[in-house]
Length: 291
View 1 (cartoon, rainbow, N blue to C red):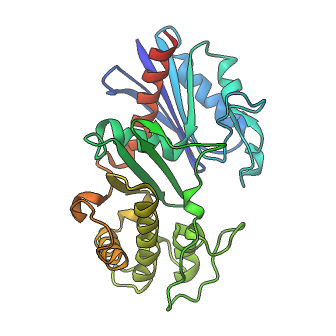
View 2 (cartoon, one colour):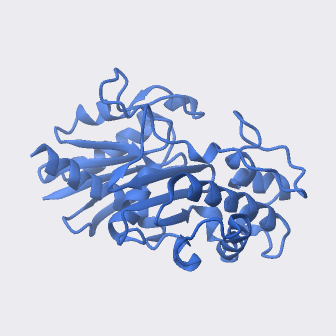
């Protein structure tokens, strides 16, 4: 008996099967090209485990349709990746696998992974942000995702511009929203280098930290979570977390009482495995609910 997981990212897909305790039994990754090419590899991977496969949890790049009553439930919708626009992800899987499928965003899946086995496991209210090629956010309150007519798009919140920042922004929709100012492409366009190539003392990190700190500030005052987790490639800059914590405390100015800062603004305990772990956990949950 195994559970399936698909972490469907804009750059690559990670597929895995795991047991009841979320131990990975097998894993593979494929580049995100076209739906025809990528999904063929996904289907071939899970076909090996078809007899034992109980369910599949999917965390996908978006935007996606999460409304079960909708005609396009299970679709990737208005994504900038043109080949994937209006693609019936869940429907495609169901043609090959007659098992329950959990469907959510990639960042919700990572949030759920940390909620089950990571830094959120001791708490009821957890917020997770991925700061990488883009910025996305997911939130869990009392064990349930915070969602309404759709899933949150917290990475596009508006932030105050840093006084030393003259970059116009890189978001095609909002230009200088959080994603447009602090995601990987914004760092690269400012510096001419990939984030991992930028020196630790480069002034750009002060600017980026100020925007991520504003994100934490807004999140704190809107949702009062128990913990805010910042994952993604940009947050692998070891100095960045401390800069964000410091600037966050300056912004908050003791307005509300928060947990100890070292335990409140953190990077993922599960590292790069948060998403795939969350997908396995969602697969197990959807199987239990369908029983």
